[in-house]
Amino acid sequence: MIPKVRPKSERKKVLELYLAKKHLKSTKQRDIIFDEFFNHPGQHITVEELYEKVKKQYPKIGYATIYRTLKLFKECGLAFERNFGDGKTRYEPVKFEGEHHDHMICVGCGRIIEFENQRIEYYSREVARLNGFEVLNHKLELYGYCGSCREKKKEGANNL
Ligand SMILES: [Zn+2]
Ligand SMILES: [Zn+2]
Image (cartoon, rainbow, N blue to C red; front, side):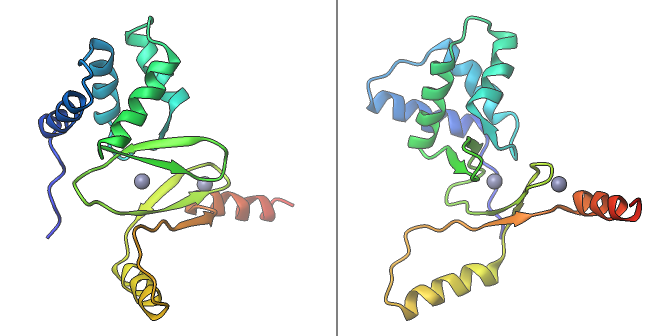
């Protein structure tokens, strides 16, 4: 069974509990960032990109606020932090508690494709077990060319 995507109200509750624990107040700025970030699941957004988006509705927002807020989402388990080797840190909403997925990254156009494969999950646990290793976490990133970049490469080769 595929768990349901966490509704926004539930995410808000997780965040509020975390803020209360840390003795932080909720702020209007944080609410705006929250809405913008969680309204677009499936994106892998950088601090810069989110800053550009939020600035359109709330020009007074500071870059550091966006940065700190994304860190906060990560700390309370609402966001994943990702690094795909381009020197940029990206964030994406966690769809449900305990969610896990891996990524394919196109080096041609930068497209990020998510995938999940039960056999990969199974064999990585198996490899760990055979080595007496306890896995806490894993990430798998495949780098290469996506379907449309491969098409373009083929066309390019044909035009030579
Ligand atoms: Zn591509
Ligand atoms: Zn992802």
